[in-house]
Length: 276
Ligand SMILES: Cc1cc2nc3c(=O)[nH]c(=O)nc-3n(C[C@H](O)[C@H](O)[C@H](O)COP(=O)(O)OP(=O)(O)OC[C@H]3O[C@@H](n4cnc5c(N)ncnc54)[C@H](O)[C@@H]3O)c2cc1C
Image (cartoon, rainbow, N blue to C red; front, side):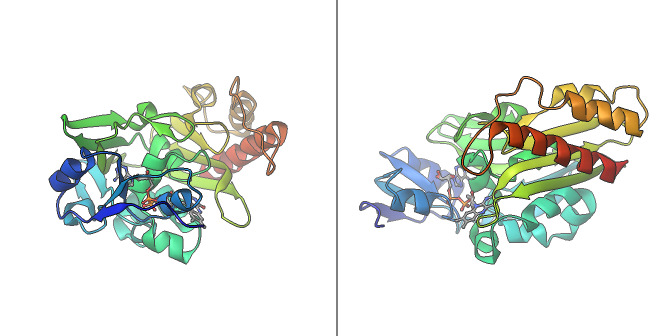
């Protein structure tokens, strides 16, 4: 399949990229592992691609002012192999390691994945459970969007057409432990169900799902079960019973909604047991 013709520009800075975006029906190109297939299938036909893969400020991972900062152009592989992430956010390492294959991990970026908002993408679950903030910049200036507000539906987010995700900031939670588990589509490895759990030092818990519904979400009903309770088998079973609640669960040729709901509970139970 061949995409329609398009112009191409490769800015050196975020500011140049924003300026290029405001010029007509342009789209950002990061790793290209979601955008290029969509262009080849003519699901999207941008008149210009603004290639942000050469912008130095969009690369890298650091710890600063009590936060882990992952710049948006950091690849899945760079996250997978980063020692700070391994120590501070082990569920990010787990998620990075099960995305696609070596080629996808080497080129695809966390910012591209979040902006694309594929309902089966892995990143949204750990990003939500980690209480991340998504920093964006556009012609109107910069803003910081809590991950819980960022995803608005199927392939849709709060991003405006001229905005670029520049970084994902995650508060360091001393003593917290985390796990990400996914039931993968066997060919692409996209999540049919992905479950991220962060257990804080005080026993409170953040639970997030991807793959289950049109948009990823925090499961507040299951989280609330842990308030003031000890982490025992009964509490875990009650949380699993409470999980998914009134969620409108997806159904497709990989998994019916009944099966997905069942999988979500199984994977939540495994994740909670791993942290118990
Ligand atoms: C065979 C295959 C298997 C895959 N398996 C998985 C998997 O198992 N799990 C999974 O989660 N994903 C999977 N993916 C998707 C992969 O992770 C992509 O890399 C990711 O979804 C998009 O990142 P990208 O950098 O390639 O973005 P691109 O494809 O370049 O861009 C995607 C979209 O995001 C926009 N965009 C890019 N960067 C930014 C930014 N900084 N700010 C704002 N908008 C931006 C683009 O304009 C475009 O609309 C797979 C892809 C393929 C082809």
